[in-house]
Image (tube, rainbow, N blue to C red; front, side):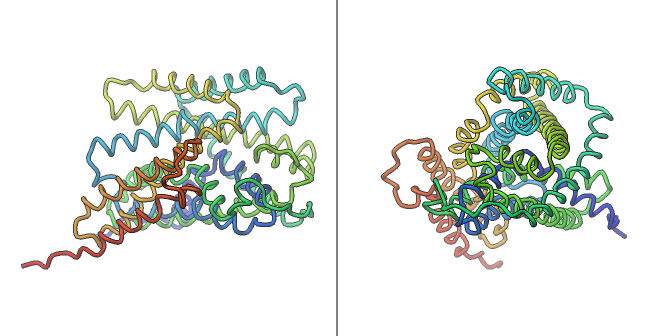
Length: 427
């Protein structure tokens, strides 16, 4: 029987859609600041950042493909639901969704109004999430149209930005500062966590497979092949965004010397290079991008919890999550990022471990036990790193915990041990 196949245009469209899923607030604000802080050590910092902000989401989508839509099928159902719920909360109302309004405020409001303060931020974020709530409650053609127009415009804008950075002759890079001075590569790895794209990949992979099913691609091997292709296209796109933004940040010492976040660096550069019209275009596109991202996150979270817990209804959840997002947003962008770090440092080891054991499960004699033991180890050590990132004294696990990578060796050892346990020969 002949299998359904996607045309070349549909395959590329799937890849660009996957890239659009990832392209959000964090992708624009973290690379410039990391470039500024890493300074002369920018190449090492960028390598670390690319590892977790490009490589890890790519591997996660590969693992989702191998796991036929999930990387948690071999965990106990209660654990799988708990981990999935935690991921939805993190990429939804706790951190990623509130961050969208703050990036929109940073780029779409502050460059134009000198009176930016806590009150204006509260009013802006409140209005932002009222609009997001309405669109989430009553999604229609407007959102689809904005999305179809927005993604090409955003890509064109980023291409113009990337090209202009190649000809930008900024200040010389400064010596690395902060965590980047202690170890640029590891600091870049941890900075890549902040994009939350590896966590989002767990959700996006399932969404992409659902899109393929609607395209009548029902064969599992075909679904997996197209998901891998889409993942590669998205990874290339993300790398193409991060590279010029890192370079821009490393040259921004005079352009934005007191920048607290990447949004300030990006606005300062666009204002300098393109003047008022460029700043207006950047503000409009970033604001719309952040709004559609917020709507997508609020809708996805509400849909997940209403489907998982049948007593909860979609529309009340949309209202609840929108209000929570508006409240959390008013801690400020810099503060929100700082608060999110311990959580991400705790959760990312679990995500990485699940990706690894899913990709290697054919090498395990007992894949179920391997999944659960590796998960437990990664969770324990991830929590230790998270508590250290939160400022608690974790000197009893001093060495790798000093750089929030204490989970790596124990988890790798457990994975290696399970690969040594050979399959019993069939009688």
